[in-house]
Amino acid sequence: TNTELDTRVPLLVSSPALPSGGRQASTLAELLDVYPTLCDLAGLPKPAHLQGTSLVGALHDPTANVKNVAFSQYPKRSGNQTATGYALRDERYRLILWIGTDDPRRPVLDVDLFDHQTDPHEQRSVARDLSSAGFREAARSILEKADYRVNGYRREPEILDKLLTWKGHAK
Image (cartoon, rainbow, N blue to C red):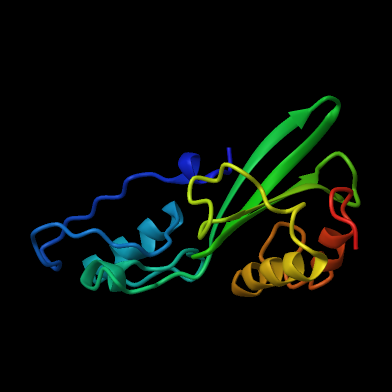
């Protein structure tokens, strides 16, 4: 699924270029960050098509924040509808947009918003609890950091309006 527990994986990196003794970094990371990290550690050029962010900064300084947002996606089928959940995680929130894949308009079918300051284990979505202004502020915070990089919504600020008119959240 797109929840915190399911998207976390251990990542262990060892290199002669790194300090020994094992340290834990707290920066957000994605598996696609492994390749650019290995390129940097090996002193190799990164191919132009490469996605991801090198984590070398965080490997040298575990307090460094090398990434603002991490992405994940997961498909689901509910009844006769198919949707893909696009999750964006920043230091405070996880926003999951469940976007219909059967409809060419790609409507937002559902939204989850988890606040890690008050709910680090993502037990309760606050998407329906926040006022429109609060929801807009949280969604804008994540989407701006992500450069609106959600499938089909790249650089489309109107996604905020689509989120606010989704069936579970009234304006």
